[in-house]
Image (cartoon, rainbow, N blue to C red; front, side):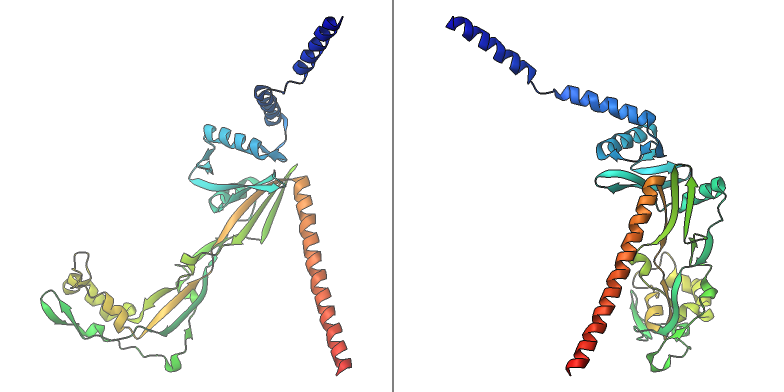
Amino acid sequence: MRKLLFVVLLSFLSCQHEKEEPISNTTITNTFEQEFENKLKNEPKIFLKYWSGMTLEEYSKVYSILHEEGVLEFGKYKTTGCSTEMEKILRNDTVIGIKLVNAECLYPLYQEKYNLLPLVEKTSIERYYRENNPDYKPVTYYNTEKGLSTLPNCFIDKTERINDYSIINLDPTEINYIYTDKYLPEEEIVIDNEAVIIKITQESIDNIVTRIPSYTYSLEESQEMRNYQNSSEGQKHFGFFSGIKDSQHKFIYSNSKTRKVVVRKNPNLITITYMSKKDYQNEQMKQQEIKLQKLREAYDKKQKAIETEQRVMNEI
């Protein structure tokens, strides 16, 4: 009898063990693939094959598909004559939007499709002025491969230094044709494309290279200097084949009394954002709440300062 009970118990435990076996990785993978294929086919898309609410894993799979199809190239959205950086917008590790960055080359397509105003060309100059050349140390003689040589008279700057080391502001319109950027006709363009919102904005980007001033030295503006540079003698010292020691170019910088300075604005990059209408409205509400919170904090800070001042006035 005991032997029979033992056999029955052993059979029961074996069955339980079989029932409690973990789900295999293959089953999990197949389930994910089925769900992904279903979403890829049926979910409303916000841009290309991306949908709102997709996981990071789903985003990566769509990213790979678009690469294989040639829509993306090295992570950039590729169109004829244009390649634009693409970024995902996340909320709690869930994709809620797609952003095309530095998309100026795409704007004409949106302009045509959605009947938008064209981009406006404006000056990119922030400051334009003349100042004394801080490196002004006029040179008359210099060493060449053949020995000491005399600089021609065109290296004697006949312009005047600026008094009191001040600056003279100049009219930027005289060089606007060189320094221009394209800007949106409005601060923000919002396109309601049924269930999807397309927002086009322009963001100022810090760029150290752009912010480096450009200089034009007074001798570079001298007609006498230009005539010399274009002469056969000048070509020996300014031409492509002039030797390092024979080159006279550096003396323009040392012998110029003044220089013009151009400081450019930070570049403005056009950004195109795709979001579902629901997510866009939620984000707008969120931004509004943040603004209101900042206003409340500013008000509370001001009230506290007033109360502190009143208290101190009563105490003294």
